[in-house]
Amino acid sequence: MSCQMLVGDTADISGFERFWNVKCPEDLRHFWLSWGSGEGWLRQGGGIPDSDDVIFAQFHSPKDALKNFGLDVLQENMPAGVAPIGSDGASEMIVLVEGQGFGLLNLVHGGIDDVIIVGGSLEEFWQKSLCQSWFPDEGPKN
Image 1 (cartoon, rainbow, N blue to C red):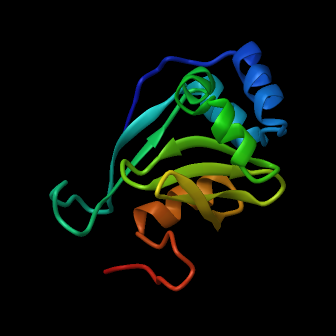
Image 2 (image 1 turned 90 degrees about the vertical axis):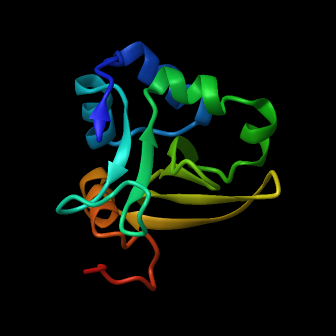
Image 3 (image 1 turned 30 degrees about the horizontal axis):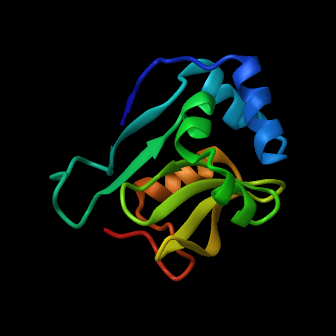
């Protein structure tokens, strides 16, 4: 994964928190203040980006998350305490679920289907992404 180094600032994070009515955990704040954003193919031990053993992930900076996801209609339909911070490049949003951790929100036909918690921390979300075990019924793939 490559990081853009478009380091966020505390004002951007505060704006994100106000818009989505959430409190960002320290690990997300640290990521945003240190790296800003990042995207790329997540895999352990290499792999070909178009093979089945990789997952694409994009984490937005707080400012870009508002720009890309700050639509009033999306905000109105988002479950309380959930805020989008990225995507998997397909139909899943990577979301912060306040007080629970990080997960995926499935968008179905332009609507919101459900939220799946992947990890209680950004680190756990990251590790499960590398092992391709985003969903509860999936174990690590070898």
